[in-house]
Length: 410
Image (cartoon, rainbow, N blue to C red; front, top):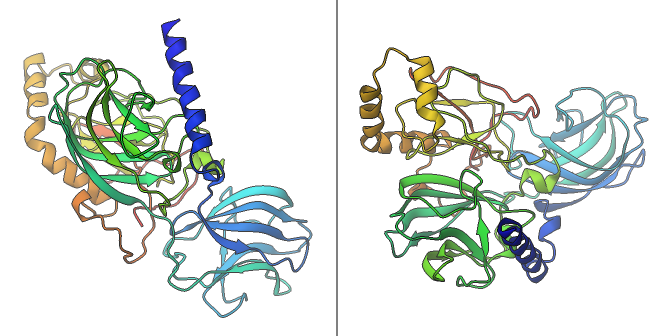
């Protein structure tokens, strides 16, 4: 019963915050580019930029009667056959089907970004006819992850600058906390400072329970329910039992960040689950995130992610009790004491893995992520990660439910 009351309280606070926050946050689809011109075959819809390579068309309509109609883009003055095709929302290169006020999310081909095209169109190749288009402004400032302040506070709470990955995802690099408080939680709420009226945020494992000790571990957190960063004014660590602020940062309003996949309706969000380190089983096709500090946790990403796999050594520390069991099943010849010594070596290797994590995330260290525009590159913060006792960067796993090309921070 206590659990039900707690969950009910959090749900009520989420609803109240949503009502008090940005009225348009639930409908946030990215940065608005414009409406498709309605020229032929009933083409219409509103076009939004999701990130450097991704477009979302709200209420897309097309009668499907064109003989060779495709999503098209190019850098000429106006739509024409000099442009290039864009695969549909399912990754298919086939002629477009009929659409009736549908939400459609599509990705530009490799090497193309919104800063290298001047228009997007529904184009008939056979008769060279533009069915409807929208212009892309020059030097368009597309949504991208944004860096905010670092955590600093009591109980040794500190971190590097927090990154707002998308409208529902926070990345906290090198988080530290001594774990001594009885009831510390990740916490968000309206206004500039935390209060008892805030909302608990599940930890990196998707659990709402008193936080354990963190020693420079990078964690990825997802806001609960339909809550977005547009609904909150701060994020931090809060002791719920004694109503004490252990450290917080303010969350700026009107951030130019990508929407989450959940907000686009592209992929259903699934419960967070943990995978063991060193297991010989092939991991599920779900992104694994975790930074250099404490092993990886399998979590359903909320933004676009690539097919690339990153492999980490099995000697990384991992909080889940299945870790040793999985390692022993694969390496029965390794004595328990030796495995324990390997896990204790992790802090010395932490900086190396942390650097590797952010290199894969687009070649950036958290200290180097800037707010000003930089050369456009494909963006995503999430990577499918597997673990192996032998480090090998050549293994590649593909998602079975989404065929989204390579991308990284924009």
